[in-house]
Length: 347
Ligand SMILES: Cc1cc2nc3c(=O)[nH]c(=O)nc-3n(C[C@H](O)[C@H](O)[C@H](O)COP(=O)(O)OP(=O)(O)OC[C@H]3O[C@@H](n4cnc5c(N)ncnc54)[C@H](O)[C@@H]3O)c2cc1C
Image 1 (cartoon, rainbow, N blue to C red):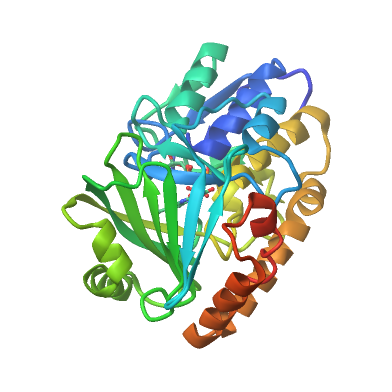
Image 2: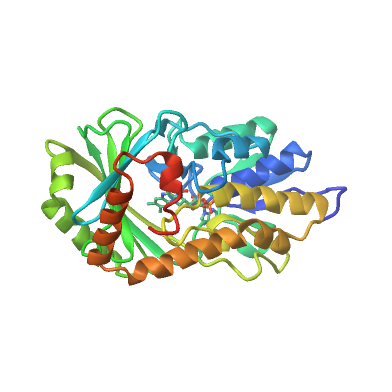
């Protein structure tokens, strides 16, 4: 693209990656227009609660990392305790200092990170055109979310759940084949999101729902946590975890999940979306090779996640129990974040 810019850079999709690209371009005095098919930013989500991992990336805090790129987001909560379960064992991770996860809201609500990014973009003068689909051939940056289905999530939003600052993860192949079940506290006291996720995907959405309902009925810990709770809405989602060979192709930059950027073991994609949006904008601004930048920035982490996923696929519930038992034997206390981080190659 010419440095002497005559036309706006056209971005398809007002989610995390598209808005991060627009903000970066505008911060560098480039014009951009974002076209969003829904009436609001983060059109795929309806007040979903998501986590930003604050470990496993050296000691780099993601909120600070984004800020240094000029992208500011505010979490609704810091998660200071998580409990992880295999079928028969569990261990806890507790932090008194750095959050283990930042929790962020998604969708059209005023505190969501989608709305926060859209407000920043609008304040800078970005033109966001809602309720509009543009043909992909007309776009310079494609930020439309998953281009294929490599992962599935099924769950629900609940009220009157007393978990507040704790997150729960269940590894049980009976209910979550090649995936996991999680519970995250919501924005308001008593709210919680409970989700069953599968990668591959190992089963269809219909089967995932059957397993979800079964786990809610049968799993004693889940039953205890949900005692007295009411289910408000169902959650369903998909993800794409296969990085495109060439995220820059046919004069277009593919960013976020449109480029296939998501962890294949956990389904995390927010950090990838912010950074790839930033890199695409930088490439437009400086002429840097986006394909090379993507490999340099993400390849080792994606390879690590793929290896973890291949190992995890092979583990049975008995294997998981043995691993959890050995963690309990090794650490006779709640784990610190650093100790937990040291297990990332193991589980
Ligand atoms: C249930 C679930 C839970 C998740 N939990 C986590 C988590 O805890 N942590 C984490 O890091 N990640 C999580 N993720 C993944 C994360 O949400 C995504 O990786 C991230 O949102 C990807 O950002 P993106 O910019 O690529 O796409 P999105 O943020 O989805 O934005 C895409 C935008 O493009 C719009 N759009 C689509 N097609 C068109 C079109 N043709 N024209 C115009 N607009 C279009 C959509 O409406 C949407 O607004 C989760 C995903 C799901 C489904």
